[in-house]
Picture (cartoon, one colour):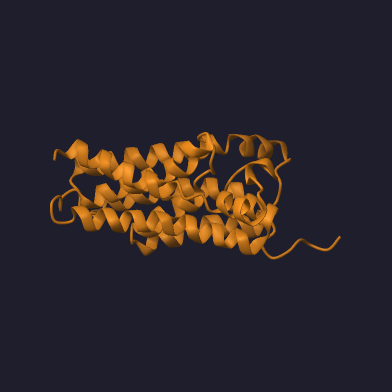
Length: 221
């Protein structure tokens, strides 16, 4: 099995895991509601909080994070012996597949979520506490200070890319320079996709019209 085939297999494995759309499935089972017809029309954590409440939003986030981690663990188990020099990169391909499956699920007309919780699963799957800490600081910090989940998501993904490049060039990951560059390109494309999926949010942020997300309850009038 050549290396290109292995990469494609990892993408497909990830894509299959990404098809588990937590908020969509919950809405259909609990009330027959397609979450994409409610709120912002997005099948992700933020809209799940707005449409179904914080508990379902938390469940959505946890499941979307876990499906990425599980895909990465599976790929690592399958290829750790046959492709030890590639396995770290293959785990990134699996993460990319999950995000693509979440954003573009075929059975939902390729209209899923924006992939941020899955992105968080990829960060955790890297197994580097520094990336997790930086991501949390940007995501949670922006959310707590500004109440804009979208801003936290945008800055969090960008900080992850910067962190991966800095740590990769410092020798933190078991990859040759060519494979490191390939990894940077994959992560960069995923970040670009996240920003593209948030283009409406970016426009509303610039206009001061973005909806705020209150995790701990709205302030009293």
